[in-house]
Length: 306
Image (cartoon, rainbow, N blue to C red; front, top):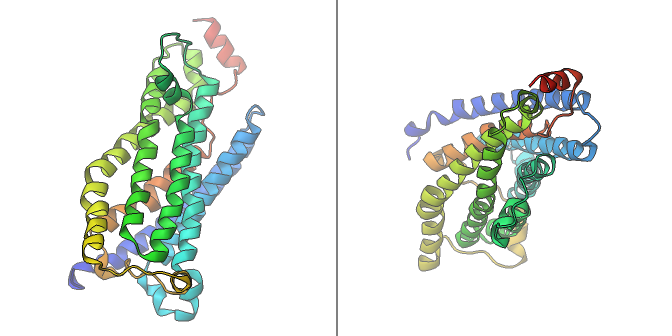
């Protein structure tokens, strides 16, 4: 891709930075508001959701700034702030936080609004409906080791395994996302619907995210980007793998230049846009700790009249 075809990269990067500065302000607002509206029945849950939301928002803002090649011209600063391995360590905390936000919210929904007991449900289906969020957390946790190994040793196969684990993780909770959507949206009692207003928003968002992300992984990212690159590297030996302690040192001190303007194609544009905007907005929403709200006096009156 020629330089002339990448003139959009600079204004696009500026727009992403501005969006993330606004996201930091929004995150601070939601953080404070969630403290004020905490009802006392979910203190630990709410605290963890706020912590994970802040982590993801702050890391996304950091990465949106230093993804630009402008900072690689500041060599003394770049080796500290834009180290490939430093970025990976920050991404690790952010990605685990993102998965944790979704998994914790799904577990909380099961706790607050459980499915009716059915004796005819198979053990496998029972696992999907109650324990699959833990499988999501495990998949994203394991993915971090392959991502870090891929970064250090420059192995496309390890990156492909990482992305496969991400897709499998969200595939594992997709059946539960569908079940929770149907369960929550089926409620017709006005009083209960008021108490479920946060969960109603969550199940819509979670199902949309699951369908879109899994479709992206299964039909585009894995078969057209990750695994073809991995197979090509294994077949040709190019780019060459790195080994030994020097590979670790290089990962700390050498900036990964795949985000140069000349490499900003459709795949990177899609990742850059979603990670630094949509995913941050999801995290900020989940900071509100979706749950079944307590019964207020006006809700009790409304429910008694119906």
